Length: 403
Length: 226
Image (tube, rainbow over all chains, first blue to last red; front, side):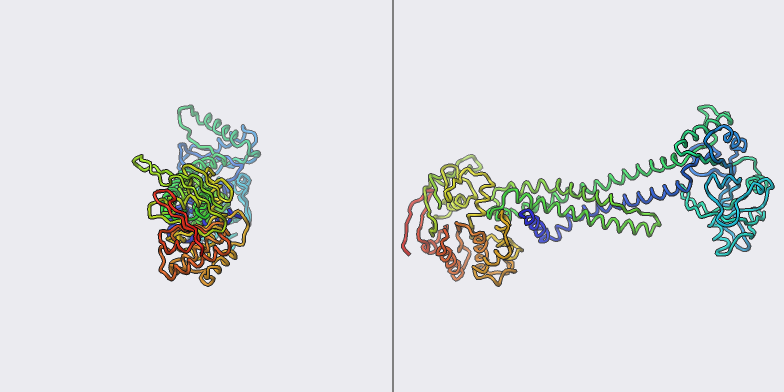
């Protein structure tokens, strides 16, 4: 009861100095808002990456032609991976459910009637669908006959359909690639963005043989996609694939690999590692602003105690114990930081949503920033308020009442 | 009610020199008395008031308030005694600025350990000093006399046995002084112990008993029949 009354005093004390209270709160509001924005946007970015990795396929291992630390798909000029490599992998590694060698050429012009667009052209075998768990929504996928007969059939991703045909049914229509006409036999289901942020639906899928011989005149394949039956064996399979390819390509350390093998877990790890470093750095910055906010509060509170000596003396004369005075001033500091914390969280959420809206970045709102804000604010309030409150409580009543 | 036995108070000045402000005060004040303590400025009057009011501790001697030995008590116990038994009235009113009359009067009740209807008690204390229509006014909106009456309401609100007033009319014009003195007389008639510290003979003369101090000692103790 009495504590409640003293908390009431803390509130009315702050209400009497609105400008000062606002300034004390500002540092905490800014710090907590920054913290909230960072957490929301980081979580949003992680969410996006995880979605991309899910689109890539959680059971997938992929070998790409070309070495180095290059991130992303190889271009068509790299010729280090062959069908024979794919056959060797298929023959010697256990636990592979599906294996699909394929070629990929980005930024190819696709023409339909008077319209054209740029899309990636994939040369695939029928296994591609199973290896990616990605099938035709309408019509058919590329068949074994298409591959053996070098047919000029193609399957379109939904972005290409929208660009070239709008709402019209593309099945049976003709598209031109590299001056070769293809008949559309199917449309793929919508897939979304890859872990690298590429639109996976912006593609034209043709038979592998047709792509190699008719379109791009190559004997090399770009990538080999493996679908592993047990996700726990991802790393094992990844290592085995590397070993086989090194042996077949006669690579011995310290020679650099002329291929890259990756899997969904490794991709997630790399991306998470980068974002973790950045997030830690940003959180550190936000924490510094909270510490500065706390220093400002401690400073203003000390000035306030000096200015309010007479008030403290009067309260003491009418029976306030040292503890009551301490509680009052500590209460003021805590109210400032907690209100600042709550205000900062709300502001942070608003800013996160605004950034998400303007930058088309996802923001994930969660309870963590809120709990963090309350805990941080309370801690800052106690630390910043303790010294001023102690000073106020320790004043000699006789001296204090003289002002 | 109050018994001071050989009370001394010594301050150490910055240079290290000792200043003996009170030099062995012996004094007994009974329940319900109306007493003036008179002394020239700087003659230990304020120190005396602070010690009787339990704001300050004597250097030596014994002080019994309501039969309890106060000298040597810790800060919490002294605070509790100030809250329950003593009501201060100051020369400069000492109201909290930017705070309504009602909130000013509530102040002692906030520190009471009891569950009270604070608003109602504070309001009736203001009504008792004739300011029932000024509850929402801030000190800056009240005259000096009204401010001092708010201060008296604050001193009264927790129903203390002892009202301790330090030059309560020192900052007031004569009309307001008379109003304030009338309230003290009324409190005395209601059976409260009232101690007035003053250097004005006209004010002191309104009490039943006048104690004169000089150089930290009681020099005369005069009872009057009013």
